[in-house]
Length: 161
Image 1 (spheres, one colour):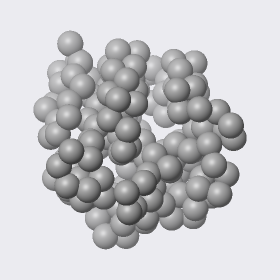
Image 2: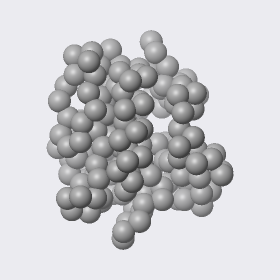
Image 3: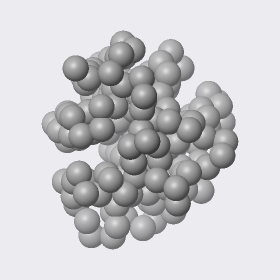
């Protein structure tokens, strides 16, 4: 069975095959297959629901963080520094002294993170800021709530190979 983990991930034998990113979103310098994903969000419950949905639908090993230990920014940087993630879902509407665009910029410049960063925001300004700071694409449209990340929406990002 695939795993949903909070904290460091463990390699999951069933997630070895991975899923591909949809052709219109692929970038040659990014991973060819997505096997591991990190969710950076300050809404613990939303992260847990999204992690379980992605894990069950696509077999991807998912790790998510919460603001229970340290700041979201500190945890995000630590997870990426010591983990191995093919893709990151970055909340664009982070609160508590940080932002999705700030963490995205730090991941790209300080840690040289080479995987996909997917912006999750329904705010056009925040989406543009995340894209300008290194996000690869955004999957929410204007006025679409984060709960709109349904299986159908996620299938526009992931395809089985």
